[in-house]
Image 1 (cartoon, helix red, strand yellow):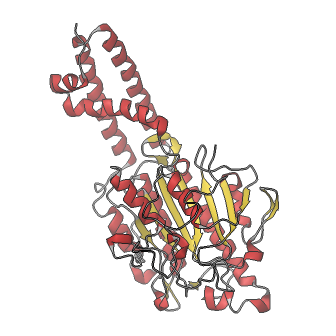
Image 2 (cartoon, rainbow, N blue to C red; image 1 turned 45 degrees about the horizontal axis):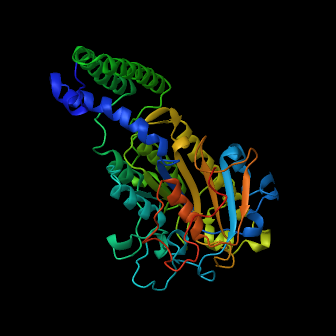
Image 3 (cartoon, rainbow, N blue to C red; image 1 turned 30 degrees about the vertical axis):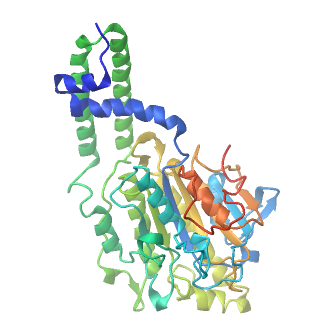
Length: 442
């Protein structure tokens, strides 16, 4: 019997739509050989800190003792890389400067508009055909308080101006899940629907086997085995409670207040869950969460006085050796760990053998390096990715100190998502327009 082309197989026996996913599985498997290390980028954004109190004790690139500020990161130490020492292109820039995520300061750059790294990545994904219902999801409670600035900029989409976050948990929930999933979707329902599709594909493929030659028939048998393996993976992922589902709907905004103010920290706990579930449902591939803004963040956290991070913990902290700032930074590190653990609790929607954390790069980024002195002379990052992810890690935690421009780490974030052309992002005159060496695995 003559060979049957993919087009003819798809056209025969009414198998068109039913077998299209079947052949896509084969093509996807071939493409995965050159797939980027991660599929998702998640930014965890805060203002600067007190550098001397943040830095861990290190032996070469190995962390031997965490600072009090970073101690909670020990819980995920094998997946974490701390990077510091990097100046921005405008090291004396301080409050409200756009450098943190854009690599560009207040000035003009020969007409190039400021765009933050998560927007650049989102735009590049869309341009490459990776389209999701939400290109980028920017969340953060009370980031508009006291007229402060966020870290996000829109590039040509909005004239290079600053972008707001969605502050209300209920608005964020409605934006993400308002029409994205069927009402009443359950793990068992999703499993039944997916398995029924696979059953139909298997039946159609089996009926086609008689129309194929011996060689094609053997290939089809192998493909049917892969379908059965996929059924097993689907069952395993759902039985562990990691299928795509809507999270619990948040309450009204009035339920997230303290002493008459918006409780940004309580809001961001909900935002973390929304982001993790949005990733699990593949509604977005790019998200960011910001704590407060460059000027103001009213902190309501256990063991801390109800005070402003900037005015109280930073600029009024010297008399107590920044006791409250240390405690709040440890709280933030704990939230970073909690976010990573949430990602570990979900399967990747395209590969249930991996968790979301395995296929996500999480980056803790800041608007300044030294918040006490208001400068960007030593910017710092906490980077985290899962097993087989983008980062070169060490069992006890890895530490990198570099005098290179901090923008190069932003290029690492792009590279992790498979983006290797950086035209239109950052300072066009950056001498080394390439990711920082030694960050990527391999």
